[in-house]
Image 1 (tube, one colour):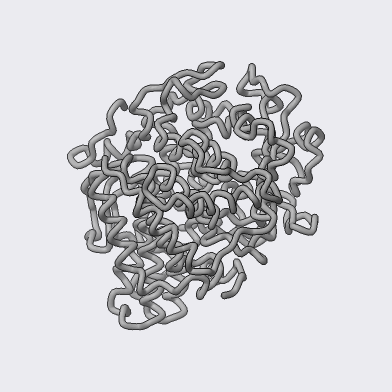
Image 2: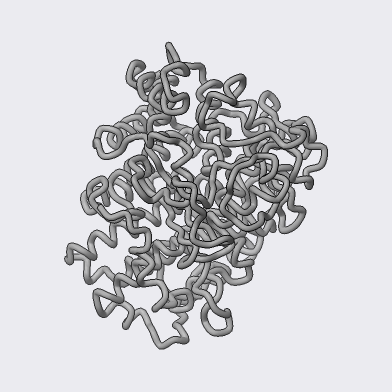
Length: 527
């Protein structure tokens, strides 16, 4: 296995598939061709060009466009949306963390305030950005599968195809989790003016499950492939996450299956917890990292955009934050946007100084009286553009750190939660939970003597996984996201926190997509 994070970027500069495949999510035209002379007939006529097309399926996770100007056939992937706002990691963070206790943003523009206040509408540009990004990537993967069907007997292409199906399944997981009942397309969807059907949440659950199981034998075994590419362990990890939330998605719990697939990753023997929690989130986290199963890879010089880790790191710092924390962030300035409420800091209780996962510092006041004042609340310095040796990343503005989509600690916690819920082996669940705790404390002093309560399990997931795109999903599964019995500062737009409407557990289908396809798309309840 190589840890070269640039492997999949080799094919991205030579090819513009955005217009080639007609994948602008804001239109339904799937048969447009590029202005640079490439067509689907020529893109796939050689192994090198097939790899370039394959690289774009991955590249669309880390890049928001092809560079250059829209009028030249380049620019952003998603028509009609700010290119930075349509970045995947930026959108995932905004929709999964900002409505929770783990994050609150000082910015007052672009639909940002509505997220923590839980007052978003179907025209919110951040919601639109992630929705169309996910659909774009689904269409991109489906188009790759359609155009490589004749090459499926080739072993290399067969592996590409399995990975493309995984990436599509992952994006459908994003849609089932955030939107519930999205439009559905696959490689059988015809080209031309197409108005996709809407798929139910339960049907989509079955589709994701079947896809992940179908591709298992064609994916490489754990860690047998290149860094940043999906393998069998990634498919097992996604199945574990899917089953963990099955009751939310379908009404039928599958916690035992969540534990089974977590165990498949764990017992593969290919992964172990990183010895230093903080190093999981630094600029050289692609090196000597035994824990990460699949990541989105960034390079401050070669894959620049204003989303991804550049957004996550720059938005979490500024002049005062740097002075107060004394922590090197590896960026020239800072955008003074995202910090946490004291609800995140409170998860650590009396162990703030001893739990090594508490990578945050209280501002001059943790009491947020003004949401737009970045210097109220809790500064979070979990992700940094600094290497494990203390050197700055390769660029002072654009960041090198990779974003972990799946890592071993999540699978330990999945199994432990299933055990807490009585659906997995108690002793094994306690063992796995205490492995995570021992890394956090550097010793066994933080270990549990018995499995904790569900409330404590939720808190432990918050301590381990904050700012990694899990919190909203976890709060919904535990019944805490919109409830009055678990509040944090400015929840639902109230300074002390308050309950929100029950329908806020799903985001709305963007209004413009409903308007474009009114006969087949039905809006989620409440919007």
